[in-house]
View 1 (cartoon, rainbow, N blue to C red):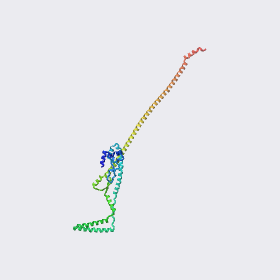
View 2: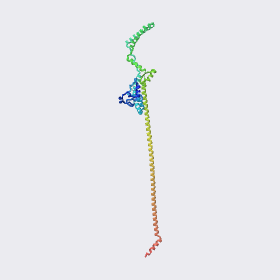
View 3: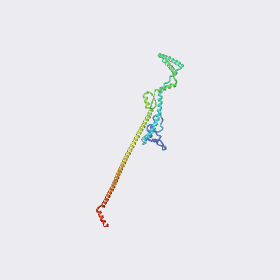
Length: 348
């Protein structure tokens, strides 16, 4: 019926049976609505795994629609919603497994108990005497039954056997332990013969027939909890892998940043070294120019001093020569003669 309804919904739409008035207020359900089961969309819904089993979770309160699931798988937002739905499903499944593991631990503790049944209480003197009388009657009747059987009196032998059975019941009533102790011993004996399924927490008969073991393994509860546990393992493994890849990506990015910093530092250092070399070169050039200028000034100063000495020397020498020349001229005879001749007319 549900499959036929889903087929009609797919062919004619979910609002096929609504009147025109009802269709006005009808809202079409989409896969991202809160009413839609995200567990069913992304993997499986745990409510569908344990139907009619001891672990039945009941019907899922949200919508399971194959058409909406197909729409979700074709949606461009599919990859963005998968992690969200898987995280919610993993949280729900982990709660289921935690509850189941508690039951498994309790069952394991029960099976681990090694309590021997209490020994039967000793009979009282009155019951012992009654038991002896009953045993004697049973013995006599059995002898009579054997004799009648040899004589071919079958009916009489059967009648005596019924009396023997009644006496055995009375004997068992005298020797029977209280009901509570009997039940406890029976329960312990059954538990000692039981085994516990670690997947679904069910009690199994130890060394049971292969057919019954196979029936349990293929049952809804065992398969359902197997799917839940497998999904949790896969989800955790995927998360761990994603975490490792993220760590590797961060380490790679940090290494690239470190290399970029080293490259920038090396580039700055090279530029600084080049600038220093240029500065030192300019300073040396300036120093050379200053030295050249200083040397030039020294040469010029030396030349100026030498020129001054030369001029003074030449001037002094020329002056001395001139003075000597004048002195020589003043002492020359011809000059003195002319001077005397020139002064002679005026002499008296």
